[in-house]
Length: 368
Ligand SMILES: NC(=O)c1ccc[n+]([C@@H]2O[C@H](COP(=O)([O-])OP(=O)(O)OC[C@H]3O[C@@H](n4cnc5c(N)ncnc54)[C@H](OP(=O)(O)O)[C@@H]3O)[C@@H](O)[C@H]2O)c1
Ligand SMILES: [Zn+2]
Image (spheres, helix red, strand yellow):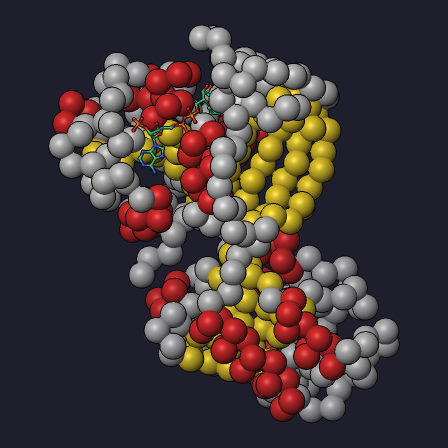
């Protein structure tokens, strides 16, 4: 299993939730500062996806505009432009669209077999079923080495990503404009939307409000089993004045690669560090592994040169599952933020946090 890319949805909407008006020209819902930020998000992405409806309605270029950002990409050894991706059931896309004609970058079209033959001269057409399933699109993108995907709409695509629980983050720019026309496309249509969102950022860019959300991930039953194992490992910690933590590094097939607990080996060792010290950081199996820790990995430490967050980021471990967010007793904890910013998936299981607190009531201010 190669991991699916981290999926960031980006949309600009009117105050009343529309992506556009019902007219033929695109309604401007953004300003220069917002465009510049979205350009940076494009530059950070390995690929950009829009629905076929957006290719038809807006004829977007989907390129990084800033020459400086393009240079940064090249200097980092990445292609100058992200890969362009679209999905269609009908295959009805004009090969003369700017999606295909502008920019010397790879173009991928996910379309049912036979529906998009006219596009095979201008793009790589990939069949992942009829209609194309977005989970299989993500699997295929992952297999092509795409680690980060920016989804820029439109409404049908955003709705499906959120409804299928396939998005990791959402950036929403809200313009002080009311469209007030039910014929206009909405940001989101009906859906079950199984995964709750957590607000991570609120900012103002001129008269545009920028909100950022993280999509809460669901732990699997294997995740819960391994996390409980990590919590139980904390019982083996020597009596200590700092956090009593357990950690397990495991694979989706059930293999446990390593375990650790605080104070193991060296009294100053943290649990994640103890577990990782038993593994080669370049072990290829880590690309599929999950780090289970009873506590949020630390982000700054007085006692050691490297934090556990940094040690995790020096491996390819794509997921971290944890029970309790580090309370700021000693230092301001930013483990989750740094892991997410680096494209790693973090799943919190607050339902198990009270067990971790119970193991740590020796610390000031910690109650079960
Ligand atoms: N404000 C913003 O941030 C923003 C951003 C983007 C777009 N927009 C606006 O949004 C509007 C377009 O939105 P939209 O909802 O109509 O279109 P959309 O989401 O861009 O595309 C919908 C189309 O994508 C294809 N599609 C979607 N999911 C698919 C799946 N799972 N498998 C296969 N094909 C799939 C289908 O194409 P086929 O019909 O070809 O099968 C479907 O009709 C435009 O007005 C545009 O201006 C606004
Ligand atoms: Zn640590």
